[in-house]
Structure formats: C-alpha cells, structure tokens
Length: 486
Image (tube, rainbow, N blue to C red; front, side, top):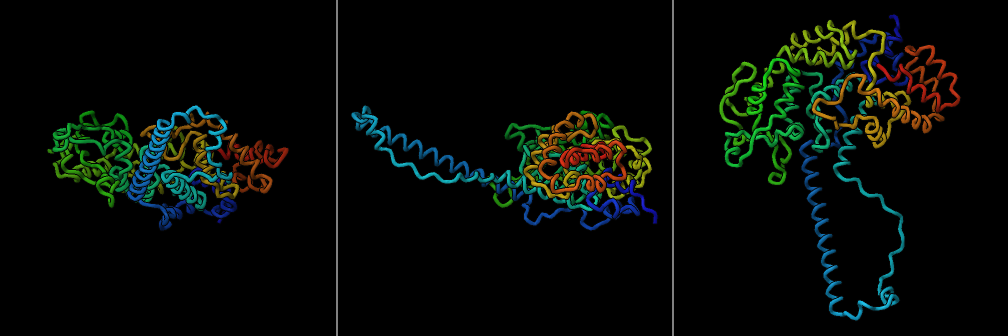
C-alpha cells in the first residue's frame, strides 16, 4: 500500500495532538484508517483515574478541609487573644514594669529557637485535586497514539464548559459527564452534563426555585434562568434560532428542583445531584411549541431529549465541529454533511466524527487553524518526548490565555484564529524557555523531521538548518507556521 507521509502528518496535526517520534511513519499507509481505529479503540476516551476522587467525594473532602482549617484559624485567634489579655493583666498588676529598662526587658525574652531549613508550605487540598486532575488529562494527551479522541474530549468539555473557580469538581466533571459519552450519543452527554453538580453550580441552577413551589413561597426565593438559557443558546439550538424568551422562562421553571445535596447536612452524599420536589415549579410547561406535563425530574429530561434531536441542534453542533477542526468559516457542504449524519444516527457522536474524517473538505492542504494553547503545549511535549511537569503546563496555559477549566464565559474559549493571534509573542517566550532547558539534550533537526517534515516549507527547513545553536533551532521549530497551525 502506498505511503502518504504528508497526509499522515496533516492527520496528526489537524485531528490529533501532533506527532510523536515515529508516528507519521506508523500511520502513513492509511491515515484515515488510523484515525478511525482510534475512534473504535475500547475505552479510548477514558484516562487513568483510579486515584482520583469522584466529584462528590472531592466536594465533601474540600468541605471538611475548609471546615478544619477554619477551626484551626479560630483556635489560633483565640489563643492570641488570650495571650494578649494575659499580657494586659500582668501589665496592670505590675505597673512599675512598664517603665523598666531595656536591659531587663530584653533579658526576659526567651532565646529564639535555632534556625532550621524552611519547610515548603503544603499544597492546599483544592489545589492538589486540581493538579491531579490536570495531570491525568495531560498524561492522556501526551501518551495518546494520535490524540483524536482527546481532541474530541477537549472540544466537548469546552462546549459544555464549567469553571474551576466555581467548584472543585471541574476535573471530575470532565471525567464523569464528558469522557464516557464522547463517542456515544449526544443526548446522553447532554443529560449527564446538565444534571452534573458542577454545571448546576456554575450556572446557578442549584439556587433556582420555582416561585410557586413550596420552597419558593416559604423562602421568598425565585427563578434563575441561566442554565435554561445557556442550554438553548450554547449547548443545543444555538443563539437566536427557534426559541423565544418565553421558552427560556418555561424551561427554567422545568429545571427548578435540579440541585445538589448540601454537604453540611449530608456528609455521605453532599455535592451530589438531587431533585428537590418542594423547590420545583408545579404544573405543565410549554417549550418551543411542545407541552410537558409536570412529572418531576422527568419533565426536564424530556425537554433535553427533544432538544438533542432537534435539527437546529444538529446544525449548531456540526458548525462548531467543522469550525474547530477545519476553518473559521467552515465549508457549507461539510456542515451539511455533519448535520445530516447527526440527525440520521440520532446524535451518534462516533459516527459524526467518522463523517468528519471521511469528508474531503477536512483534508485541504492549507493548515488554516491556529492551535489553541493547550494543543500547542501538548504538541510541543509530544514532539520533544517530554512528559511535562504539570505545574509548568498549568502556568503556561495561564500565560497564554487558556487557563485550564477557567473559560471566560459559558460560551467557553473561542475557536477562531483572531482570539489567539495576540498570544503568539508569549508562545515565543515559552518556546525560548523550553529550548534553553532541553535543546542541548535533543537533536532539533531530527525532531523537526519527525514533527513537521512532510509539511515543512523550504523556508522553515532553511531556518532550522541555519540556526546558530540548538536552542535557536528548537525555538524555530516550535514557532514554525507548520507547527503552530493545524
């Protein structure tokens, strides 16, 4: 079988997370087949997570950690206040000592303890959980044969984004609500994402109460429309499509009662999903011309099921996938093909991904998309054969404007080139730092051949070959247009 090295390199950059040593050659006989094989690999979307807590367990652990820390701080404050009070009382009982000479005062002080090496401050539990989740994510990305499935995980995690500033459960959310469904049905992922405690916290639905519910009447609490609006605008139908403000309000009423168990009163299951009937708005509701009877939690699930199969959802999802993988202005024929496949398979995301891979529009030679920062960092680590230190990776993402699990809004991080152009200067700084640290142990020309060889222009090859030093050559590779783009 003929080997197409250029198509193999393009596949690894456009659909995956960049080549590792030998991967271009490994898939050159059938690049499309290699991509399909990764989709079909059992458990392809899962990461090693045996040591990672569930979202609920992480929530409960952090609750207890914060409670203990607050208690220690309170005891320390009481101790200081008691010591001050004792000192004041001693001063009142011995007023002559207030004017005692400096020598006597100094003599009364205890000898300072001998100096010891400074002990590093322990990493707070919320930070440890975050870094452990981040490490599992990047270990999976760096170790993947191609990285297509990881790219799909990252895409869908950004589509259904939550924010780590809102909850310690952001990493667990990705493992629990995104990874198990990324090659399954969109409807199942939609149900898992919207009912996950991290999403309910991020979009304030945990506090939304039906105005006419028992809880709403007794507590004078009201409706929050954030989750309902973002489901319609961002997660399913798309902005300004087939719904109205009245549909948003009705859907928000349907979602009342979708909340989480309070850890303070439920130490065994705190932070987990619960449907609270007394907070649910009673009565039937209408959303986009369809009536939904009040049957508790199933009322919301029924709306989500209908949204998942709506033609507007198919087009919205197809457009986002095509924009992410192919071009800022995706070819209409590609969008039509993906939307049709979505509808024909009832939202089978594996089949939609297959359609993307098979589409001729997805294999245009031009590398039209700038890699997002996380993709570029992962590609750099894969190309240089490094595992990466997770603290540095997270710091790099912060510097480059894509802080892990901290999107700027419920829309997620932007997926157009303009959003990432300004950060290329910072990428150069990071590339320089990496090159200074690693290049003397590496062979930059060989890495360039393995990472971008079939795609490299004459100018890029000449620049790397004529570099004055190994660090300069490696920097030029990491900042080459063929490496920055997909």
